[in-house]
Amino acid sequence: MADIPAIEKAYQLGRQRYSDIGVDTERAMTRLEKIAVSLHCWQGDDVGGFESSDGLTGGGIMATGNYPGKARTADELRADADKAFSLIPGKHRFNLHSIYAETAGKKVERNELAPEHFAGWIDWAKQNQIGLDFNGSFFSHPKAASGFTLASNDPAIRKFWIEHGIACRKIGAAMGKELRTAAVTNIWIPDGYKDIPVDRKKPREILKESLNEILAEKFDKKHLLDAVECKLFGIGSESYVVGSHEFYMGYAMENKTLLCLDAGHFHPTEVISDKISSVLCYFEEILLHVSRGVRWDSDHVVILSDELQAIAYEIVRGGFLDRVHIGLDFFDASINRLAAWVIGTRCMIKALLIALLEPTGELRQLEQSGDFTSRLAILEELKTLPFGAIWDYYCLKQQTAVSTDWIDEVKKYENDVLSKR
Image (cartoon, rainbow, N blue to C red; front, side, top):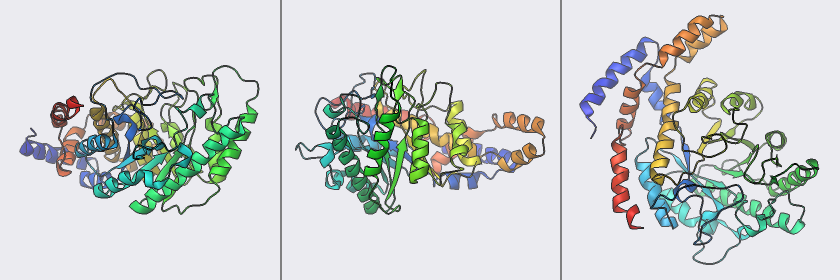
């Protein structure tokens, strides 16, 4: 268990160290507690959803591993999320896919989904005083078997998925209205070719028309924020993805939607941290899907990596905290799924705190004056400041697990709950 006097003493020493370089740790923590990270429901059950007892696969979606204790019902998934939230400092959000609808055992096609099928989720969010975000599920379905949905040449297939997109926007708007916080409702499709196509233009023209139909109805932005998500390649679409970065960036600019940047959706050596300031020159707001690719878009659990830290620095340094919606997007079935949520989210919050503890104003002045020597020297010295003492104290103030205490909580939950599934 945490030694509270030791944590408080270490904090006071750390606070002084940061004060010496002009950083107010109390101010940083106050700002941090207002940042909401959107936890993704699909980490809790390997992107299975509740459409069938067998779960879902395909369409570029693949979780690996068979760790015991996977959530099988909405109630189990909510219970797991409750436990994860209790181990994460701050007040956050929850991100749903349409395949997590509760239909009381009745078969409801995706183009017929309605807000009533998410009433249980809305009630749960109200009880927890959190916001919900939403996603259409354009994968793992007979009508996605060809590898094409909104860009399909088949009018009937395309009509089905357009209707699904329209239904999802209505659900997202209902969530936002009920919870009094806008639901970011994202569109990602797996459409593309495994091998080299001849016609790259036509599918993109079709996709643009489909998106126009989906987005035709206008909703209050207090309730719904639309986002579109690009990708370089996927499983089964290695050579060509219809919804490329260039396509969606142009579409989002023209139609004033959010652009979603996913950390695993670009070239292996390409990072989204370098794109944030560029796109925010032209967009009011953007959506991030923070993930970790290992050699490909493998959606590993987020860790406190150089790129995660770079993402946080860009958001804070640019003054973008109110313009960037931070969501997580990984799914690892090889470890305790609840622990994956906690590890990834706590790392995202740690990265933001480190960024908030930087003397950005001083560094910017050095840069603008051409003193690159001092800039580099100070950036390196910052790496050894006692961030851990501030983090532990922040967790203590938020009445959540400090340091590694949360691991014992997860193991107890695994023993008492997950092992009995």
